[in-house]
Image (cartoon, rainbow, N blue to C red; front, side, top):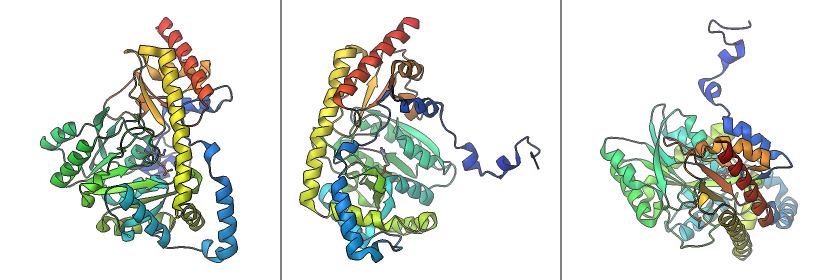
Length: 407
Ligand code: PMP
């Protein structure tokens, strides 16, 4: 059989709606060129491999395989390794301003899996989800699989505009979920103020929805004050997603969800169907490193100044090369800097010229929900050296000069 009555090939007719409609974006296709050796990429958000704790991981691997190889290579509980859940709960209690018990923790394959599982357990097609606009693409992708109605809430320098959300709610919008990355947001670098964290938690309690507090970057703070999780104001309405990707290594794929027990039970059943459990060996290795507070503190104290220096190098280059042409709110942490280029700039078109000039970035439009932001771009300072960051910004200026001239 070569096609069905609608002109689709036999196999297209077999695809689920989700698989048929999930498509690669034009921007993603363009960014394939970012891999070229002549291109300096500010597009990805890869943690620097120079600071991966490879020797410690190798020693831990040797140790656990020698001492308890049969256990660490065996199937495990869907909820995750008991000692890692205990450690996750203790860390959350110490760093979020909101206590957590081990029974509230589900270990996941990265926080990305947490996003998928929460969507699976809470959403039916057509349900409303309010999200940071612009927002983290991976979250949007995970949630879109459930075919919800996404409503974008604008951000400013203090993160999600909870006053705008409150207006929507007063007008009758009834979301089931609110997705936000409140600390050093991907893509804008903005941090939700403490007043807005409290306000968001109040709105969730008043209107009965769940907040996803997705915070993979929180430990990477370079300036400003620590802030409590929205869960510190209302733990019953907040699901915390945490990740070891940015502090240890992303390749272990270890994250966890911390949530109210009514949701945890459902998440565990959903995860069972997806992958039975997260890699036992990865969990044991993450636990081996994280359980030593002296090691962990020393490691994070290496990461912070390194990334701070990267951030400062990018900001300095932007100031030197682009001056008023690139407006940015310096992020207090994380890996991203959001720039607004002169009004009328089309950063998707600029990317093509930029690639010709040997630099890549992500046009802001890739993160947009309801508000196109054609003159914005996300620049990552995580991966390239300060010298290469400066060179990348010089190339960006050349690309901008060219597009301005031809416009
Ligand atoms: N949330 C945000 C905001 C991210 O930027 C990322 C990855 N860059 C993730 C979640 C997923 O991280 P992981 O699955 O590696 O924990």
